Image 1 (spheres, rainbow, N blue to C red):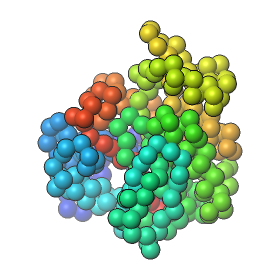
Image 2: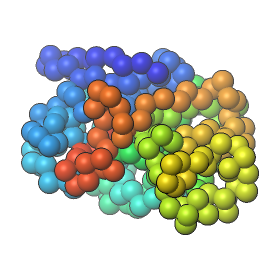
Image 3: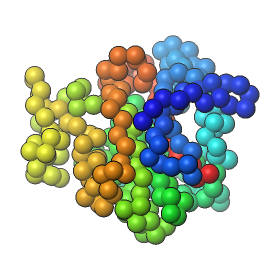
Image 4: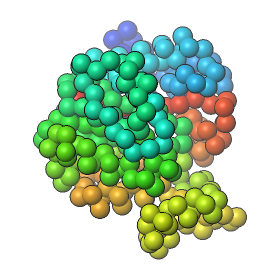
Length: 267
């Protein structure tokens, strides 16, 4: 995964993290803090409306995102830390989808961008070069335990006929195992879902409490669902302790933060 600067048709430069794994048939990216118009403490590419940022600033940041995405429109849902993945397309209403409780969106229509909002949770992008279908998933710890990654594989298979072995997946920046300290109830939830979670490195010891490696859990779930390991690209970046402060982090900033977006669209 690498950082690239994209320029909109009106000359605005916006950096994104992109993965070569998804292929040329899909526009995609993970936004960073830079490239927008929001003022501190939301500076500058805040894409979340709920944090107290000026709505007009967030609207402009979304305009920039759509302009560089290659999509005709960009869908988002009301994320609730579950595993429901909603199918969208040209006939879907943007406002209706935004009000729908879902932690994943999928489509196989050209220009129908799907996106998720994050600020420590994991954005997961999926693409199937054979069918043209794609999905964006929001994976916090609850959604990860519940199997949102597997749910994404399943709906692409059942809805669009995607074969797991054909899927290409990019797992974006999130809070890393280095910083995701959790209480015993969270460790217990992961162990209930996978009794080997400590043995396979998904739960690791910390100085005071145990830590969770969300990306490792998600990768193992994808592999168990049939996605080849070589088709999964995982960002190593931690949103909480990134030395260059490139990411929004709720654990670090609380309400005085913003949100990033992971998006994918069939070209």
